Length: 242
Image (cartoon, rainbow, N blue to C red; front, side, top):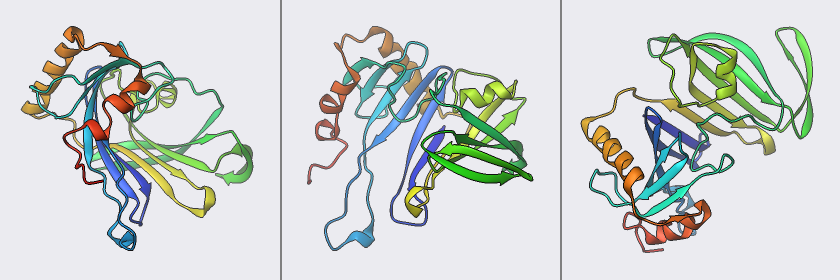
């Protein structure tokens, strides 16, 4: 299972979402952003869960559910294009812009030794910087991304960063830290594997939802249509006092 945290670190603007994966299947936990009442900003934003999305990475088909159980019913049924993303793009994808990678050495995550590399995007503005005594100039959008790569682990269809894994055969990206450095704010996204084992209940959900994906009679719709048909207002998980 993965956990993704997004927001501005060390502020009230920080949320996390869970992602479960098994073989070529992914389940996303989707949350809605709930703003605090005027005058109570110090309380912080809340992020209640409103649905779960099952995604078969091989077929790109998705189904939405309003509870994380093996008895839940399919609410929405749709197929993603290669440019559409539910929560994070985990499949093979070649970005339309140049990316540069720099080795940062090894580190430890728990008791596991991993490689650290930095990814930079060559777009939008020009930056001058120095790495390991060498000067570089690049077009950059102020975004920095650190990837943590573990070698000697089994391969699967689950790709946090496919292009980086091509550079390191027999290795997998197991964590991603990204920071948007524009506007003097540290907006960060952390994506890391928090456990490599599923519970019995989680496996039961995957088994049933994968069967539902093959047999559901719910009419297929466009991904964008699911925003309304399976949005927060339709979910029994989300409180209706807004």
